[in-house]
Figure 1 (cartoon, one colour):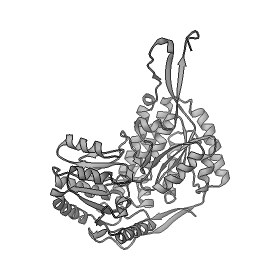
Figure 2 (tube, rainbow, N blue to C red; figure 1 turned 120 degrees about the vertical axis):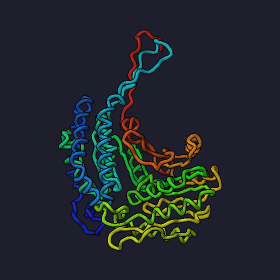
Figure 3 (tube, rainbow, N blue to C red; figure 1 turned 30 degrees about the vertical axis):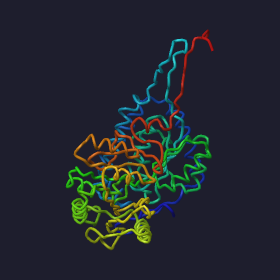
Length: 463
């Protein structure tokens, strides 16, 4: 069975779940469409009640949901709790702002003879959400909160190693008072993706996943003439300029690279450090990584979690070997990790010159690429030498300089003097091979919306 809960800390298979049947998928589509036809006319105030109720439940049962996330994908329990709270904040954001974000817009015209044009924002139908395992709750909520608030319905195809987290959303939204059919988790096998996207009742797909998955799903959506948003991989640059607070930058780099065991699209994967502070930064960074403690993710003293699965650890190990075959230099850093479970020893990778293709790879785990930059311009060059364009960070005591460098980095997001982290009230998304479209705030809620022009024109006006 493809859908199975496997504890990454013990590699024990906890539970398995059968794939959805043809009948279950068709029922989900029919019930979602019927519910959408009513929900689209439901007031924003009534939709907000459901969003606020979902947030209240998440806050009330935070530990229950967090334990489930830690069980299925191995993240630290404290990180799981923060994820649940972030998810609640996203529900609350749309409860408070959806109506204002989607209010009709009166358009300016050159003269009154052109009419009184208004742009209205209307829901389109069923959105298919295909979500990954690294944030079991946040990834889903950042789709369902805006789309349900906008009046759409959502069908979820969650990662195959998170069946219990996926099922928890059915329970959550039902308890929050969402009408039946508007949201449903489907343990859908891959062939169903094309069938769902080709259904005329489905308006599009939101995918968060790998570059390879994005290529496949975007192709299916394109052939079906369906809207798609793609939040794919990243190899974010973490730039430390010569005037940075090196001690604080190094501490943030350790956190930015190793939270969620380094399995984050926007983690600090490529450290780009100015030559004059490189040696000092590197020593402090190694010291910080050495202080990390790998162990039971439910133990509050643990600061480095296992990877999401043994397969993920094995794949990352193979990727590192291939990079070394191409000439990369790899150094073990940090204390030894447990042999039990899907742990991965933190590594430092250097020697990634222009001849080494591995400099363009995303390493999804505690593998740090480090680069020595001659100056500011060289740091920008290295940062932009990537097929990805998701996020990045710039560290400097001169905020104006930081903003200038941030504008020169070709990505969708840049933080200054802080590692990038998602927030309920900030947009999320990238460019290049990191995908297209945006999630959260007003940008996210308008991705699967019909922006309809309605213009009242005098019947005697000239054509």
